[in-house]
Image (cartoon, rainbow, N blue to C red; front, side, top):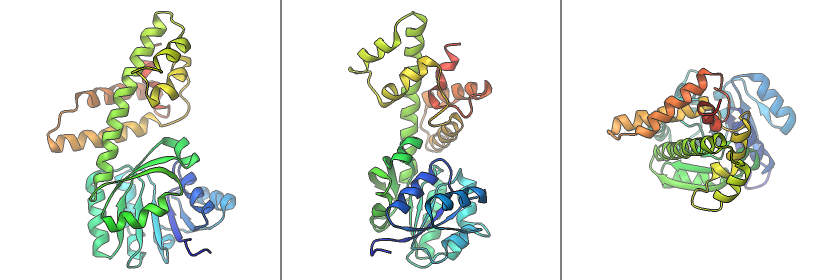
Length: 292
C-alpha cells in the first residue's frame, strides 16, 4: 500500500456508490464495503477486490475514512448512529464523507455527533448522475469545517471533476437543493418547448441543432432533448430520486419561509409521471405529460 493509500470503508453500493468505490480502488486505496443487500457487496468485491463487512460498524473498524452513499435520512441515520452504525466503531481523527442527498438537518446532526467523537465530518452530495459516477466526473458540493474539507478533498478527487467547499455543516446539502431546483425548472421548460415543436411537425433534430447554439443551450438540452423527442427515458436520474430531492428543498423552503412555486409545480408534474409508471424513468420523462 502506497503512502497516500487509505483504508476506506464504503457504505452503500448502489448505482452511484458502486462506481465511486471502484474509482477509489483503482486509485490504490484498500476498501472494505458494506451493502444492505450482501450479494451486491460480494459481487463488487469479486470484481474489484477488497473485503466485505456484515455491518457498517464492522466495515468502519480500523478505517482511516468512512464514506456513505445510501438512500435517505433514515438510511443514513441507520448506517451511522444505529445499533450497528459506523460512528461507534470509528477511531478519533477518522474522516466521514456522506455522499447521500439528505436534509441539512441530519447533516448538521452528524457533524455535531462526529465532533463529539473527534471525527472529521463532511456532507458532500454529488451532481452528475450515474454517468458522472462511472466516468469519475462528478461535481461535489461540500459542507463542513475547513479541516474536514481539507482531509476529504484528496479522497474525493478520485471520482470528481469539481469539488467546492460551500460552508459549514449542511451547506453541501443546501447547495444540492439549489442545484435540483434549477434542473427541474430547465427540464420543464425543455419539455414544453420540445412538445410544442413536435406537435407543430418540426424536425426536432434540426431545431435542437440550431437553438442549442444560442441562449437556450443547457446541459439538459445537449444530453436529453433528442431522447425526449424519441420517447427514450430508461436511463439517467430517476423520477423517484428527483421527487425525494425536491421534497427536501420544499421542506427547507417552508422552514425558511421561501416560496418555491415552480419547484412545487414541477414536483406535482413528476407525481403525474410516477402515476403512469415512470417512477424509475429519467427526469426528462416530464414530456410524457405533454406528448402522448
